[in-house]
Length: 97
Image (cartoon, one colour):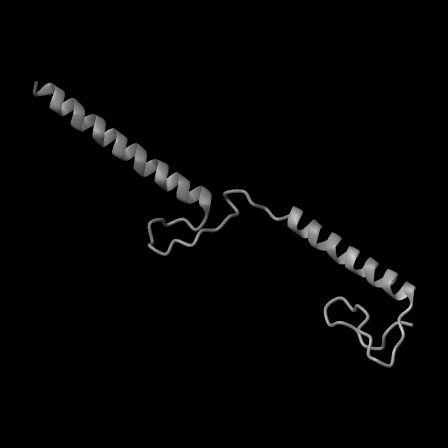
């Protein structure tokens, strides 16, 4: 017979010493577990992990953006600026030769 006591999260049987479980009680609990797992699986599959939706924790304050896409754009802009500056320096040095 189903237990009068249930687990707090999904209501599985939680028998005490004076209760006697039946096979159907386990079958019912298995279905509850299966339904719960399916619900969690669906939630996990629907998590949006795109760069725009993935936040970053920038403890050193290197970026103004709070997501991966924005931080990558900031980094690319900085690198492109450094590349352009390097080309200017190289051209300046070559002009002096």
